[in-house]
Length: 434
Ligand code: AMP
Picture 1 (cartoon, rainbow, N blue to C red):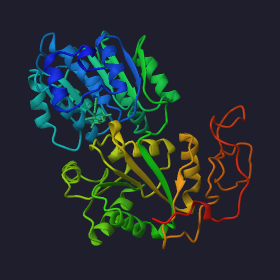
Picture 2: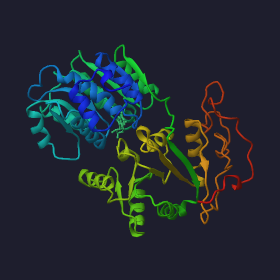
Picture 3: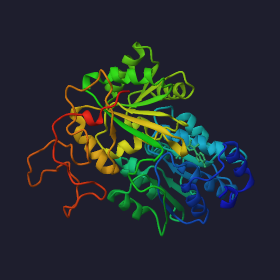
């Protein structure tokens, strides 16, 4: 299948060809005709599947017909959860719309509002925004919504995780009732479905990955290691593997700062990206990472959401996330659009329950590897690690939320083997020298 067969016109095809995309990705094959049909679309797709082009291309096609927006108005509104993602979506709009004479703008918090107000004054065809700043601009009469033809809610699941639901509802109420709605989400939990019901009508449903599955192109490993040894192990992996570009996830902002200092002092150029950093510092860290000046980018989940770095070969979970779904998002940074990648998790004993949750969610057992000189004094329980087998035993209280598969009918999650009997705490089976 080609992009031309999807109904896109010459200026868009030219821009796509310049990006050297030859075949539309599965989400693009489904979403582009669906959006062009004018119907609402509800798409299950995670970052890395090509979803941005999946909605941007048909939107630009539609915008190339019709009249330009009037002052302080936009024809398409794209809402994203983070500043980085907003900037990246806006970049895609500019890239794919290069041969069309359309105007676009991006607005997000953390930077001055005045230049954004100026930009909106003449009206734009596409406005990419984060919810808080958009509402600020609305309150200051810098933007009116009565000309919105298409509304896109990108990464809806993350929007809700980040507590944007009230802002989103406010914005939806301000939109004209006759409009096209597109909603993208990596996962479809009950709150997302509820929101979808309020937002979209008779949608075309598009799905490219079973929810919570991890991309096949990403090889995953768990390195059992004691907590204290993690920084040194990471350093060894970077040095021995000659990793030139690695994205490292920590749980906390302080943890990100500490690790960045440690790596820097050890001679690995590193930068941190998290919510306490100014927009300028974040942009600088990201561009340094993209152009190779920064070898290790250390990020927290929220800051890293939506980062689009082409062909990132290495992602490291220095600490596992508290929410298992975040593991899927984190490792979605690598192995994008067909490229292969490696995701490594440094896991200490305290995190064995989190690891169990991740393996159940993604229905896989991640291979363990032990690095010589870093054998944990406190090994993970049962390194053969059948999903569900390595959570610590807890007393069973009636209302206690156990870490076992949560099926109302008491069945196991499909695909997970029976919980194994605990074995002695040895890891000889999984031992591999790296
Ligand atoms: P996204 O899921 O929108 O974040 O896109 C992930 C990455 O895939 C981006 O770096 C895009 O430039 C790239 N990409 C999008 N569509 C294609 C395609 N059809 N072929 C190859 N790469 C693509």
